[in-house]
Length: 179
Image (tube, rainbow, N blue to C red; front, side, top):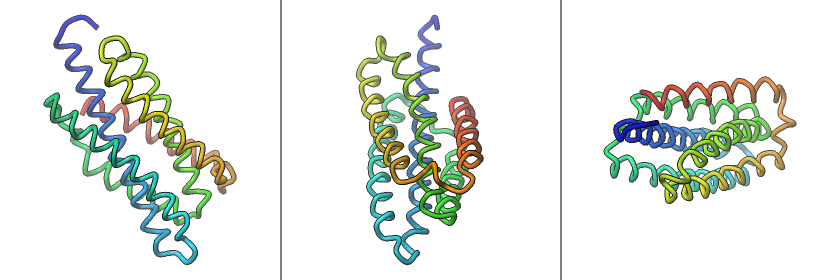
Protein backbone atom coordinates (compact mmCIF):
# COMPACT_ATOMS: atom_id res chain seq x y z
CA UNK A 1 0.00 0.00 0.00
CA UNK A 2 1.93 3.04 -1.21
CA UNK A 3 1.70 6.48 0.32
CA UNK A 4 1.67 7.83 3.84
CA UNK A 5 -2.03 8.64 3.75
CA UNK A 6 -2.82 5.07 2.77
CA UNK A 7 -0.80 3.73 5.72
CA UNK A 8 -2.55 6.10 8.10
CA UNK A 9 -5.95 5.05 6.73
CA UNK A 10 -5.06 1.38 7.13
CA UNK A 11 -3.87 1.96 10.70
CA UNK A 12 -7.17 3.68 11.43
CA UNK A 13 -9.05 0.64 10.09
CA UNK A 14 -7.00 -1.73 12.23
CA UNK A 15 -7.43 0.25 15.42
CA UNK A 16 -11.13 0.93 14.81
CA UNK A 17 -12.02 -2.70 14.10
CA UNK A 18 -9.94 -4.07 16.97
CA UNK A 19 -11.50 -1.59 19.38
CA UNK A 20 -14.95 -2.63 18.16
CA UNK A 21 -14.10 -6.30 18.58
CA UNK A 22 -12.89 -5.89 22.14
CA UNK A 23 -15.93 -3.78 22.99
CA UNK A 24 -18.14 -6.53 21.56
CA UNK A 25 -16.29 -9.19 23.57
CA UNK A 26 -16.72 -7.27 26.82
CA UNK A 27 -20.42 -6.89 26.02
CA UNK A 28 -20.84 -10.60 25.25
CA UNK A 29 -19.30 -11.59 28.57
CA UNK A 30 -21.44 -9.03 30.40
CA UNK A 31 -24.57 -10.51 28.86
CA UNK A 32 -23.52 -14.03 29.76
CA UNK A 33 -22.58 -13.05 33.28
CA UNK A 34 -25.91 -11.30 33.82
CA UNK A 35 -27.75 -14.54 33.06
CA UNK A 36 -25.48 -16.82 35.07
CA UNK A 37 -25.36 -14.45 38.04
CA UNK A 38 -29.14 -14.79 38.31
CA UNK A 39 -29.19 -18.55 37.70
CA UNK A 40 -29.11 -21.10 40.46
CA UNK A 41 -25.73 -22.82 40.35
CA UNK A 42 -24.29 -20.26 37.95
CA UNK A 43 -21.67 -18.78 40.28
CA UNK A 44 -18.72 -20.84 39.00
CA UNK A 45 -19.23 -20.07 35.32
CA UNK A 46 -20.07 -16.46 36.13
CA UNK A 47 -16.71 -16.15 37.88
CA UNK A 48 -14.85 -17.73 34.95
CA UNK A 49 -16.61 -15.47 32.48
CA UNK A 50 -15.74 -12.50 34.69
CA UNK A 51 -12.06 -13.38 34.48
CA UNK A 52 -12.25 -13.59 30.68
CA UNK A 53 -14.19 -10.31 30.57
CA UNK A 54 -11.35 -8.78 32.59
CA UNK A 55 -8.84 -9.79 29.91
CA UNK A 56 -11.07 -8.26 27.24
CA UNK A 57 -11.43 -5.07 29.28
CA UNK A 58 -7.62 -4.72 29.35
CA UNK A 59 -7.54 -5.15 25.57
CA UNK A 60 -10.35 -2.58 25.18
CA UNK A 61 -8.50 -0.06 27.37
CA UNK A 62 -5.39 -0.51 25.22
CA UNK A 63 -7.39 0.22 22.08
CA UNK A 64 -9.11 3.19 23.73
CA UNK A 65 -5.64 4.62 24.32
CA UNK A 66 -4.44 3.80 20.80
CA UNK A 67 -7.50 5.42 19.23
CA UNK A 68 -6.73 8.61 21.13
CA UNK A 69 -3.01 8.52 20.34
CA UNK A 70 -3.62 8.00 16.63
CA UNK A 71 -6.62 10.35 16.52
CA UNK A 72 -8.91 7.64 15.17
CA UNK A 73 -12.62 7.67 15.85
CA UNK A 74 -14.33 4.47 16.96
CA UNK A 75 -16.82 2.80 14.68
CA UNK A 76 -20.14 4.57 14.34
CA UNK A 77 -21.69 1.21 15.21
CA UNK A 78 -20.34 1.25 18.78
CA UNK A 79 -23.81 1.49 20.39
CA UNK A 80 -25.16 -1.29 18.16
CA UNK A 81 -22.17 -3.58 18.79
CA UNK A 82 -22.50 -3.02 22.55
CA UNK A 83 -26.20 -3.94 22.48
CA UNK A 84 -25.75 -6.82 20.02
CA UNK A 85 -22.87 -8.24 22.04
CA UNK A 86 -24.87 -8.15 25.26
CA UNK A 87 -27.86 -9.76 23.51
CA UNK A 88 -25.67 -12.47 21.99
CA UNK A 89 -24.09 -13.17 25.36
CA UNK A 90 -27.38 -13.26 27.22
CA UNK A 91 -29.05 -15.31 24.50
CA UNK A 92 -26.39 -17.97 24.41
CA UNK A 93 -26.26 -18.10 28.21
CA UNK A 94 -30.02 -18.65 28.30
CA UNK A 95 -29.42 -21.70 26.10
CA UNK A 96 -27.06 -23.07 28.75
CA UNK A 97 -23.40 -23.24 29.70
CA UNK A 98 -22.35 -25.23 26.65
CA UNK A 99 -24.01 -22.73 24.32
CA UNK A 100 -22.27 -19.87 26.12
CA UNK A 101 -18.98 -21.69 25.62
CA UNK A 102 -19.88 -22.33 21.97
CA UNK A 103 -20.32 -18.57 21.57
CA UNK A 104 -16.86 -17.96 23.02
CA UNK A 105 -15.31 -20.64 20.83
CA UNK A 106 -16.92 -19.24 17.67
CA UNK A 107 -15.99 -15.63 18.38
CA UNK A 108 -12.44 -16.38 19.46
CA UNK A 109 -11.83 -18.59 16.40
CA UNK A 110 -12.67 -15.68 14.10
CA UNK A 111 -10.69 -13.21 16.20
CA UNK A 112 -7.61 -15.44 16.22
CA UNK A 113 -7.59 -15.51 12.42
CA UNK A 114 -8.25 -11.77 12.27
CA UNK A 115 -5.40 -10.94 14.65
CA UNK A 116 -3.05 -13.36 12.86
CA UNK A 117 -3.55 -11.46 9.60
CA UNK A 118 -2.96 -8.11 11.26
CA UNK A 119 0.14 -9.35 13.07
CA UNK A 120 1.64 -10.54 9.78
CA UNK A 121 0.79 -7.21 8.15
CA UNK A 122 2.23 -5.10 10.98
CA UNK A 123 5.29 -7.06 12.13
CA UNK A 124 7.77 -5.10 10.00
CA UNK A 125 6.32 -1.59 10.04
CA UNK A 126 4.69 -1.53 13.51
CA UNK A 127 6.52 -4.20 15.53
CA UNK A 128 5.36 -2.93 18.95
CA UNK A 129 1.71 -3.06 17.93
CA UNK A 130 2.23 -6.47 16.33
CA UNK A 131 3.72 -7.74 19.60
CA UNK A 132 0.77 -6.39 21.59
CA UNK A 133 -1.67 -7.99 19.16
CA UNK A 134 0.23 -11.27 19.53
CA UNK A 135 -0.24 -11.13 23.29
CA UNK A 136 -3.94 -10.36 22.88
CA UNK A 137 -4.29 -13.19 20.35
CA UNK A 138 -2.70 -15.62 22.79
CA UNK A 139 -5.24 -14.64 25.46
CA UNK A 140 -8.08 -15.05 22.96
CA UNK A 141 -6.75 -18.53 22.12
CA UNK A 142 -6.73 -19.40 25.83
CA UNK A 143 -10.39 -18.33 26.02
CA UNK A 144 -11.20 -20.48 22.99
CA UNK A 145 -9.34 -23.48 24.38
CA UNK A 146 -11.11 -23.13 27.72
CA UNK A 147 -14.48 -22.99 25.97
CA UNK A 148 -13.72 -26.13 23.97
CA UNK A 149 -12.55 -27.96 27.10
CA UNK A 150 -15.77 -26.88 28.86
CA UNK A 151 -17.96 -28.49 26.20
CA UNK A 152 -18.52 -25.83 23.54
CA UNK A 153 -18.77 -28.39 20.76
CA UNK A 154 -21.38 -30.36 22.74
CA UNK A 155 -23.85 -27.47 22.71
CA UNK A 156 -27.23 -28.23 21.13
CA UNK A 157 -27.12 -27.09 17.52
CA UNK A 158 -23.39 -26.35 17.81
CA UNK A 159 -22.72 -26.37 14.07
CA UNK A 160 -25.46 -23.89 13.24
CA UNK A 161 -24.85 -21.74 16.32
CA UNK A 162 -21.14 -21.52 15.59
CA UNK A 163 -21.66 -20.78 11.89
CA UNK A 164 -24.14 -17.97 12.57
CA UNK A 165 -21.94 -16.38 15.24
CA UNK A 166 -18.83 -16.61 13.05
CA UNK A 167 -20.68 -15.07 10.09
CA UNK A 168 -21.87 -12.23 12.31
CA UNK A 169 -18.34 -11.62 13.58
CA UNK A 170 -16.93 -11.54 10.06
CA UNK A 171 -19.60 -9.08 8.95
CA UNK A 172 -18.99 -6.87 11.99
CA UNK A 173 -15.26 -6.85 11.20
CA UNK A 174 -15.83 -5.68 7.61
CA UNK A 175 -18.31 -3.02 8.68
CA UNK A 176 -16.24 -1.73 11.61
CA UNK A 177 -13.07 -1.35 9.55
CA UNK A 178 -14.76 1.15 7.25
CA UNK A 179 -17.44 2.81 9.31
